[in-house]
Amino acid sequence: MILLLLIHFSSLFNNLSAKHNNNNHHSHNHHASARSHRPADSNPRLHQAFIALQAWKAAIQSDPNNFTTNWVGPSVCNYTGVYCAPSIHDNKTQVVAGIDLNHADIAGSLPDELGLLSDLALIHLNSNRFCGVLPSTLSNLSLLYELDISNNRFVGPFPAIVISLPMLNFLDIRFNDFEGSVPPQLFAKKLDAVFLNNNRFTSFSIPSFISGSSATVLVFANNNYGGCLPPSIVNFANTLEELVLINTNLSGCLPEEVGFLYKLKVFDVSYNKIVGPIPYSMAGLYHLEQLNLGHNMMTGEVPDGICMLPNLLNLTVSYNFFCEEDGVCRNLTSKKGVKFDDRRNCLPERRLQRSEKECKAALDRPVECILGGAAVAAAAVARAVALPNSPSLAPTPT
Image 1 (cartoon, helix red, strand yellow):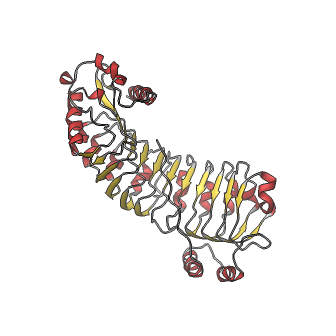
Image 2 (cartoon, helix red, strand yellow):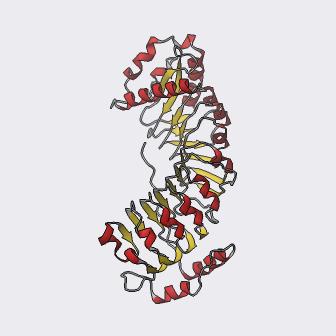
Image 3 (cartoon, rainbow, N blue to C red):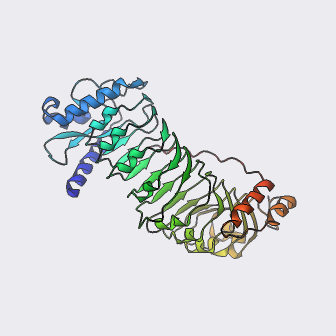
């Protein structure tokens, strides 16, 4: 079964590559090979696809770039944005294996009939104006490997259908209006990349029961999670390379467990309310390239072990209350060529630092990174300094 699935994906991605190499996305010639297979009226899979795609076309309210103009007739493999490939069950039978309408600027909704497209391996709807909730019938897409609905106008709670998709590997739902809590079951799935940024989520928890995640990228920025980064983040230690939590209302201290994410290359928790020192354990993040702790309320020293990380390219600690830079940190840019930003701290003899009054108000309230203490200290420091808003993360073109 796995071998057949890989063949299916290989065929699909070859089709995608061939089509994207054609500058005219309205050409009908890119599916010429599909015409050599049995016609749609003798292929029940393509007939189901015809029903689903016609229902979808009826739910489209605006298509300014005419992506769906040729969605007419039963030959669905000729439709713009629709990709056919041999079925994993019968390589002589063509099925609709992928839909790519990225950057089409289409307005409309997703009908229940999309659940008929049970052979789909990928859905790419980045940068459109689709709205409403995701239909529950998408849970029928048992082969779905990639789901990208980013930069649309979807609403409602976290789409629970995602949890039920057994083959899902890539999830991108950023820049929508989903809200509420992120279910802990999401982090138990074997996902490689998860993009949840720029929604309205208010909480997430990483359950301790995860025995080992496969995620390499987690981007949660620009939500309103609040609370502390949980020690259970250590459950991602064997795979995680990028963790981005910009502007998520995080508070408390960074847990020592962050330093156990030994594969981490990017760690960005800027524009939050994090207090306390930089955990010494982070000096063990030998693969770390980008570290951004800026715009928080952290105190203590910038330790030499961080500045000496062998792969470090960019270190930002600006807009905190650090009062000392240890060892090589004092001359990091000239000695190691690292981009280093330490503005607006409480560092003696450094330029562009906070006023004595600001520093005293924060440093008179030292933070003990123990249960409860950090939260109290964070509230006190928050009264002493106003934090600016974070810039939004731009969606990545795909």
